[in-house]
Amino acid sequence: MLLDDQPAYPMSCFFMIKLRGRFNVAVLESALQTTLENHPLLTSLVTETNGQFYWRNTGKMPDVTRLPMDNERRFPASKGINLFSNPALKIAICNDNADPKAVELDGQTNVIFEVHHSACDAIGLARFIEDVLCNYARQVAPTGEYSAEVHRKLVEPDLLIRRGTFVQKRNELLQSLSQQFLRFLRVWKFFVNRIIPLTPTKPDRNAPMPVADFPAILHRDLTAMETQNVQQKAKQLGITINDLFLCATFLAMKSWREQHVTDKQRGQLRIAVPVNLRTPADVRMPAANIVSMVFLDRKPEKIGNSQALYQGVCREMQHIKRHNFGWGFIRGLAVCQRIFGNVHKMIRQDRCWATATVTNLGRLFVDIPLPTRAGLVLIGESLELIGIETSPPVRPWTALGISVLTYADCMTINLHYDSGVLSRSDAQSILDDIVTV
Image (cartoon, rainbow, N blue to C red; front, side, top):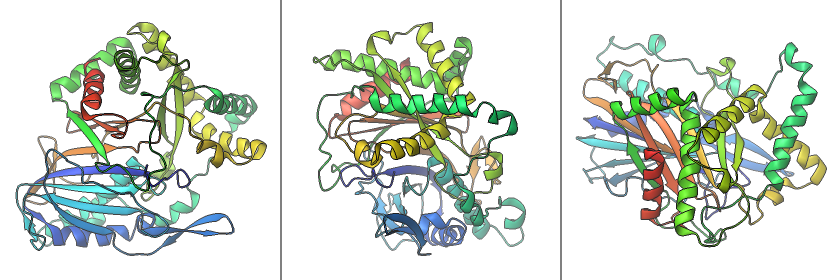
């Protein structure tokens, strides 16, 4: 992810928390400073020595900008993060009060966290934000009413040393050779399968900066009843919610291409699926990237709104989980590096590696040690968390990054699209199709 970062396509993840009530900017900055002491990757730079890359913690506060609320734009424009000169985290505070000197802000305040994906994934960033909200609540609570020692989950920065280790259980060792073969086979397919981009419009991957409206993100909030309907449909089909959204994305991409693309390319549509590699031993791990990828390929002519698609995706995802193919992709890349040399050069080739990315973060902030009201987290007496939005990066030729999460029993679906090759109306129609499948 560090080497695939490009000026025109920043490797940035975005996470927005929407707050309602009286918000204190100074308290947030103080809570950030306290929290960042336990999450060192977010204040770190990358240095290179003899071709090797290292994290160097600066201990500095990230940039915090103040911007007016723009309900139409939602996410402020960004140029990405250069990890060789800037820490991995940037923050923007958006409110109707445009006075940059105002400390107390009323109404709705959106706080947007942008992080370089090399330093942290969405699960890690959610953990960091949870700690920030707890520290904020501790500072605004009356003396003696809130105990950080009792309520805040412990974070152990030293656990970062073991990030990326993988210990096989004894009963898995006998299967290791066959598993390694299956993993290598999937990595081989990653390189050799011809993948069809959503649109034949060529991305300007050599531009000196991203498009002006980066990140271009749409969202759809489902009601509690609509969320229950999604859960019920998945249950009736005998698949997971994640499987359902993967199938919906395949169907939406096929439908859009049939309506808008006249040049019918031969090949397969591919969805990249992030896989969380955390284990129970990582529960106290600070914010970090502990994610791999798996890939689902389907020929467009084989995609149909039928049991064959739903059950096929379900079986493949179960197979992926059973054989730990998330780890297999990382190790397979290492094997390919030894055999073929510069994998980085191969990945940077001007070709489509995935048509879309789909990630399901599940239920967020369900275990946060703060009170709730009607499912919404309360931060002190005058502030509540009313919504969350998040999105993965988009890459050249990978025009869609879809993120699904559940908060307060309601789903939110975010669609991060490459506005250099797709119009807003195109992206909106794709999102509508995904929601209605």
